[in-house]
Amino acid sequence: MPELPEVEVLVRHLAPLLQNKIVRKVRVRRPRVLAPTSPRRLRKTLQGARFMGLTRRGKYLLFTLRPADSVQPLLLVGHLGMTGRMYLASAEAPLAKHAAVVLNLGRENFVFEDTRYFGRLTLDDKAIGKLGPEPLGAAFTPAYLVRALKHSAQAIKIKLLDQSLVAGIGNIYANEALFRAGISPTLQARTLAPEQAKGLWAAIREVLSEAIECGSTAPLDYSGRRAGDRFFYFGRAPEAPGFYLERLQVYDRAGQPCVNCGHLIERLVQASRSTYFCPRCQAADREHDKEEASHRACFVVCRDVSSCQPPPRAL
Ligand SMILES: [Zn+2]
Image (cartoon, rainbow, N blue to C red; front, side, top):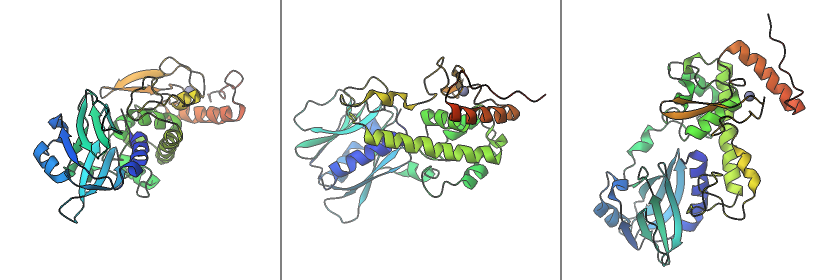
């Protein structure tokens, strides 16, 4: 499922390709992805409109277009849902089976494809107003996160998926950020010490920035024709190097050794979603946390799990 980094990388890829392109024809093959916009309204609004810009908010793509008959710009809101893809393809190429909306731009088509139809391409922008701050933006400060977690009885892993708390984090990066911060995914959000919340703030920004960097520098296949190795949501182009596979440290690594301490990564289910964590690095008990944090610091120095022993437990 695409999260903030994937959407950001897609926006950076698509923005220059769409700039100034004019929508010649609108084809709606799966009307439900437009809801509540009707196919007729989408066709009428977009026909002849020119792409002026593309930005991201949370996991949403915000396309700005200038309509054919007005100087007032219009907003087209995209969301990839669980399986969505947006890409440009030759207008001559046969359409993919699950192409939901196709905007013809002359020699090329802008294709929104979605096998499960949880994605959106709509003129309805209500969802944007409900989003919390951007995790990489200035409004998302350590103090904001400390305050925002203070009154929540939810487990911190579940709370991080709340798009009104912070926009764009999904299951993969919630797992990765908690691991990076050494915080148990089951800990009640309000019980996090301010120092832990600040560590989590930093970890969120790190994991997202690194993923954007990784996706921006690797050759990707946005149409997903060659996807399959789970390297990045869009799939890798044939020339992409293999070492990027090691990008995620806990997600989908149940039963494999923790990169910090060697303990096996475990999986549990929270709110119907898989959580992956290291029970040693992310122990729920705070005293234990401190001890393990010290062990992690040692590991960073010696880089050798076999010779790096946790400090003796205080009696
Ligand atoms: Zn560990």
